[in-house]
Amino acid sequence: MPGPIRQHRAQREAALPWSMSMKAAWYERNGPALAVIEVGEMPDPVPGRGEVLVRIRASAVNPSDVKSRAGLRSKMSVPRQIPHSDAAGEIVDVGADVPRSRIGERVWTWNAAYGRWNGTAAQLCTLPAEMAVPLPAMLDFAQGACLAIPLLTAHRCLFADGPPTGETVLVSGGAGVVGHYAVQLARWAGAQVIATVSGPQKAAHAAAAGAHAVINYRTEDVAARVAQLTGGAGVDRIIEVELGENLDMDLGMLRDQGVLVYYGSKTPAAQLPFFRSILKNVLIRPVLMYTITPAQRDQAIRDIGRWLADRGLAGADNPGGAVRDRPALPAGRHRRRPCLRRGRNQDRPRRRRHRLSWHRCRRTHQRSDCAAHCSIPAASMRPDRRAISCPLRRRSSVGML
Image (tube, rainbow, N blue to C red; front, side, top):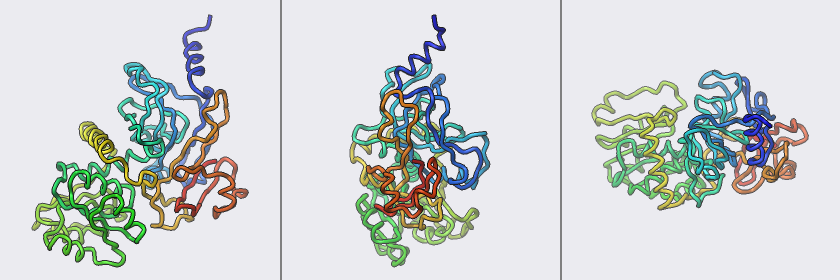
């Protein structure tokens, strides 16, 4: 009679639509993607106490994922890292202390790779049950994978000091990932929204998200335009993607008691104009989603659920953002988030070899597309690690086919 461990493995193998070996992408040293990312098989993870096992349907790439893999922030603390924190999929198994009723639940995940070795660039991922949030029925998996870090960041930028109802909010980079969500959330909360962008296409994108006014900072004087729009009073809150370059201008656009919230800066040590800030009594608030408190995170998730139920997701097939990780990506031209999806045939039972493939919106990036449109010939790349720079629908990414 087989022992309990063998019985458990047999039950899991019968329940899951693949064998006991999953496919994943990982790296064991920091460096460029094409030099360090490997694709192969490893044993299926088993959920521990308080954990769930998620079958990953789509895994999104954040700028923080790219910086961590490149070693720009810190060096690796684990021997092997499966990247990516954001994903969407289905719960296929649960550990102790987690209701089995959650099996089969569609979920989106957050922080999967933060302080953990097993991120979501794999067919399966175990993570604490609270990090798997129910995915609304109106969203598909690709849309769900693009929610977590950028949407939670946008919420914290807007709601850290209470709802921005009745306020005038300036969103810097209103066509980017966080900015796109911030425009939608601010409009939902009852704020007047001004967005800055770098071109006419991005202006249309920000306006479609709900911005009342859009300023092209390449062709317009942002400070003068904000003064015109606010009657010289300034704005109540600024959500800033580039603190180092815009700090001085931002302080000039804030009204007294205003709030400057920032979540990014190319300049590591921005200089604070002391007298300008203290005379207006402004609050300067940094936001980093990885280290917010559980109470703040839970409130954000509840608000996001209400927002999705009330408004839906504007531009859900174009979540925004660019991960500039390759020389083939022209800076500033891409708004869409790279999203890794499972291949078409991966739900067929008892198949050991599966394919991870990149999608643009809802269209599969086929090999024929690579040959016809990509700047790097498919034949010149290793079969398990192929660089893609595709101008179709302004989507660029590095993926594994």
